[in-house]
Image 1 (cartoon, rainbow, N blue to C red):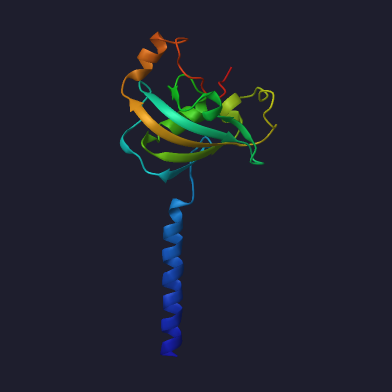
Image 2 (cartoon, rainbow, N blue to C red):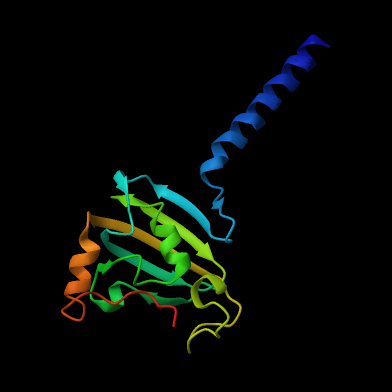
Length: 159
């Protein structure tokens, strides 16, 4: 009987540890519906609205089809929070230089009440895999001054 209880205690402890360990696999879900995961923690401060960030990204639909990527625009692209749609900007506030992240959002966080652009499946969530290469503190104002002068293309913007 004692051996049986010890066996059950070991099983329960293993399940508990597995549950705690799986926490990093579960996304944080914000009140807006953004699901955010840190795949590799970055260093330094989080990205702020006044900052610019150089990002590698891949945007996919629920079926896994690639809708956009930084690679299709020639490599890592510079972004500011004011350039991107609200769900992407919300995710940027959780990112740090050197980190890798995955976040999923309903289309309403990207396009509001408007239909998605051509080529985007209707009612599909949008999933981004992002790597933050560099964060430039205060870089947003510099990018705005040089807008149109070589700044990278943002993911689909709210219109």
